[in-house]
Length: 358
Image (cartoon, rainbow, N blue to C red; front, side, top):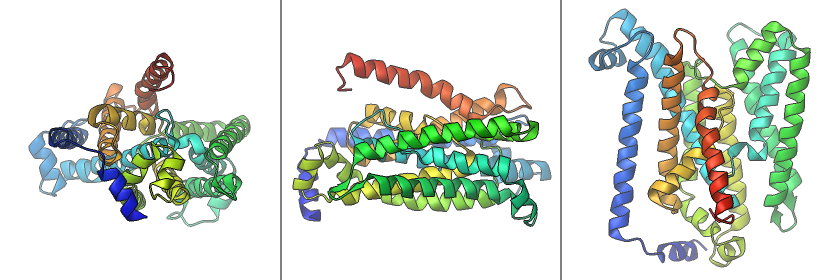
């Protein structure tokens, strides 16, 4: 089977010039991420020069420089890297499986499940949290969000399973239903919450990197990193999916196994990202599509470009919100929505004008 897949994929000619162009674009995107990362470390209410940032990173600066860089901004930078990469790769994989560039990682209900877990903890979990040690209490919300995303994933897979395999249509429709139920649950919790709970709920639901610390960063990086390794190896399979499931099957691809793997990896990455930073919209939609515009339709390049573009977009949005109205910090979800909303409308209009073939 694997031989047939490789033979089919490698039979598609890729000129040396196009390959070189794609590699140059990836290098430029990596440089863009590096520049955005250094800007994230340098820019803020307390501005730092490049030498001060480097000294702070290696613990060679003053006490204040070391604290600002190593304890506040660096965790935020690496959390943005993990969250953006996970969302962008998940969006790319889901769009490839569904053969629809307008698909979003939240489409199958993963984000809705994470939101239910987090909101339930904020509004209903006070009695349970009071019985835990102070060291364990901050972990209740991200653990509940991750558990909610995993439970929803298991439910969606169970409902979508048929004797012939997983029905993509049922998968999407179940996700839509889960999202509607989650929205109703959140509305009920908003109605019953007090002022403090309402503030916490509202702030979390808009997404933020402000709560980053090295422990949460390490956990998120490990989960998303392992998922990313497997996702980056799915390029050939996702290319075959663009021919249709029947053609991919006859080319030697295990279609059902690929769908299960892509959906599971999407759920794990999005669940971990949402648990760490809250729901951050449009990164999983915008980054893959921009990557296709830059490097073409081949998923081997699109996956890598999506991760880099998603990271650059999220870092840019974070730099924007941190410096918009200092010392206040608007939720990062506002910035990503301001970027992603118009882009989504442009995609939709372009798709309609193209007769649905965009």
